[in-house]
Amino acid sequence: MTQATLKAQSSVTAGEPGLRLRDVRKSFGSVAALQPTSFDVPAGTLCSLLGPSGCGKTTTLRIVAGFELPDAGQVLIRGEDRTYDPPQRRKLGMVFQNYSLFPHMTVAQNVAFGLRMARVNRAETEARTRRMLDIVHLPQHADRYPHQLSGGQQQRVALARSLVTEPSMLLLDEPLGALDKNLREQMQFEIRQLQREIGITTLLVTHDQEEALTMSDMIVVMDRGRILQAGSPTEVYEHPRTRFVSEFLGTSNIIACTVAGVEGGGLRLRLPGDAGSGFFVADAPARPAGSTALVAIRPEHLRIAPATQAGADEPRATVSGHVFRGAAHVFQLKRPGLDRPLMAYRQITGPVGETVLPVGAEVGLSWLPGTARLLEDEPVREGAA
Image 1: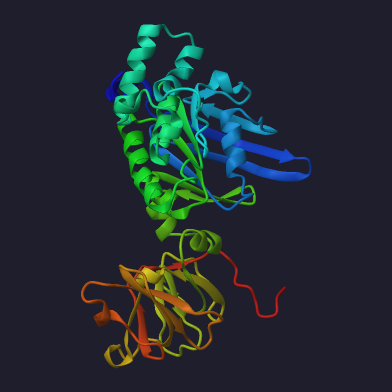
Image 2 (image 1 turned 90 degrees about the vertical axis):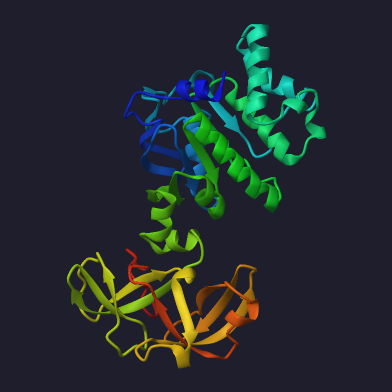
């Protein structure tokens, strides 16, 4: 069982999603854990369900796995309706946060467990186990026990055990939550590389935004049992539709701007307290002049320069705070008319001191065209509950 063999076995009919949910709904008593939910995961890709606790991502995973039955809707895996099949008939691989390795079994015995339960003959079991340990780079650890392994090695054993049975799909439930930061980042790349090489459709549940952005082909952002946005990591990060999505996927400056007018296929907006011509946002639906619109600008897109070097038409702000984060300076900026500071990242490309702006300094604000995103949310009026 080479990696090429595994990849071929994980393939599905051309054009058929690896996973399809159609109007899946689930309630626990009077609590709607999952509102009617539909999305497709293309075959061979890794999709992350991302959101805060209680958003419905784990309920979705459990329904896909067969641990929970939906109140309505369909679950199709590789084109087959598995909505009411028990877990053992779905032929899924699953890795949990605590790995659930058997402490009294060696690494090889843990990996081979599923094959033994399926009554695969001994010779084939041993051959497939050896090859899987080669794939996860652990052949030299075959006779060790879980407690003799590092956290990352235990993670790879759990992955090997899930994949050796040639599952139709892989489910990952917060698989890196127990690891420290450096090891977690290393394992993100290792799991991603393995998933790509094997080509298995994978569903990952996580509340970690960086993990979702690093590992995914597709991200589904959830809140309160519903999908807010789904798309590629770049699309969801760079083109958030709502304030929640914009702020949950990293830091974002949310500004209530005034509509100065309609221009071509977009709007011209003014920052609070700005009497100039404002700035243009493309591909925005028409809104009446004088109305308010929410705009999101990522800190890495917000450019700041000393006021003496800024353009005459650039809005001004005052540096109210600064921290150093190794690769970048992070500045807090105070501006009249805003109820909270703006955040700006300034990349360090030379000596650290050359890019520092002192607290109290006046700066000009600018950003590249197309990096300000109009959000769908209606701005909250002053005094509203």
